Length: 155
Image 1 (spheres, rainbow, N blue to C red):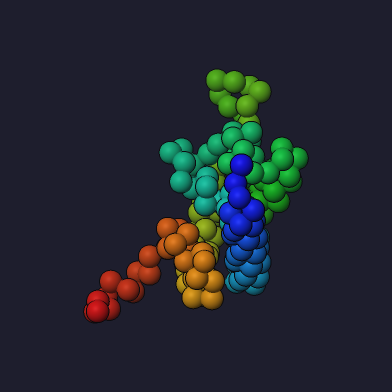
Image 2: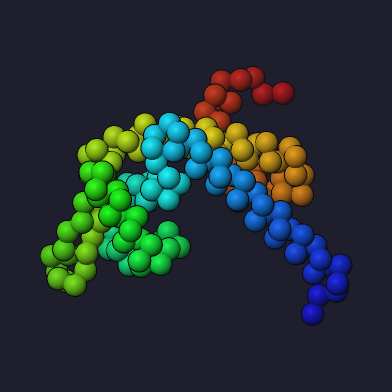
């Protein structure tokens, strides 16, 4: 069993991490919604599927990867499908399986939204690291490299 001060440090760290996550997700939500009419979850689905070998996953795999319930995943995929950004089809070798796949329109929107997402995330992580030194080591491990940074002289 951990001493009380170590438990308190863990709890404090967990709270900071939860606040960081909520703050960044809220900012991403506002920016993606305003600039691309996408929610964070919608962006996440398009991003995840775009990185798959065949650009699709079974619905249950998608739900697991997105940490969503089956019903929430179905609603999310339906919204994207209604907008022409995803398509669903039956798995050829298992008629019970349903795949979700990114459409050309989905890829196009993702390519426009990706720089917005990455720039916003990079900014929020940098800002958080400067305001919350306790999380700086964690933030540095997940930070997106700044593509312009390589053009700047290193000290």
